[in-house]
Length: 332
Image: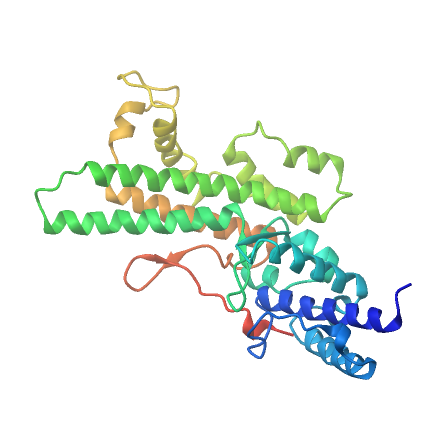
């Protein structure tokens, strides 16, 4: 038979582990610097009661839904998660999808602050670092920022050293354009996934159209934002920025992915091999500009917000950068 003293000791241990997990999520305070679990069975009952009350107050102030986080089931979930992480010796650890975590402990600020979707994975990176958020759009946006900045660096190097050939520049240019369309595809699929997670009883006709994997990217990109918003107001493929992005520039992308040597034109009237080699700086820059504009437009249509925080933007030096996000000022 478990004694009251043992139950109090177990509760204190779970509360302490739950506090550590909140710190690891980036919601803790600097007073918690070391990970150690006291031998609570050695504490007298009155001290255990006082200690547990202090831990509850601490946990309630760490930026999570106060009512949900103090629920015994939430505390137990966090404590169990701590034990699984500790078993890895606190290595980088996939805690699970944001939607599943929030179902256990309440809403985290990550979704609001970082514009991350419900299907994003929360990655523990250590104490006092804050959790990492992993989802395809974020990483492809990072890829785009890296590739475009390397492309611009390569251009600068060619201006200084005239002996350099244009081949590295062309390779990077193709990579930038391919990354743009990878990002457009992931962004569109992400809107669909988010909607389906949050609307389990959605109209079957809307679900069928959202899940139509055979539809062209241009059609999906133009229609998905209006479908998830619920007003069926679709983006116009004949207007900027979509007209050229899914027209001539998409043909360029197709010439890389489905390269066909020879001079025979496609049914759209362009020669794939010629498009494959014609990778100039204006084309690369325009592709990036139109991609950023298109995602901003679609995001606003789908969510009513201006632009996703994970989408890169041009900095004063002409390179692509990203907005630094701090969770500390969002603590409740």
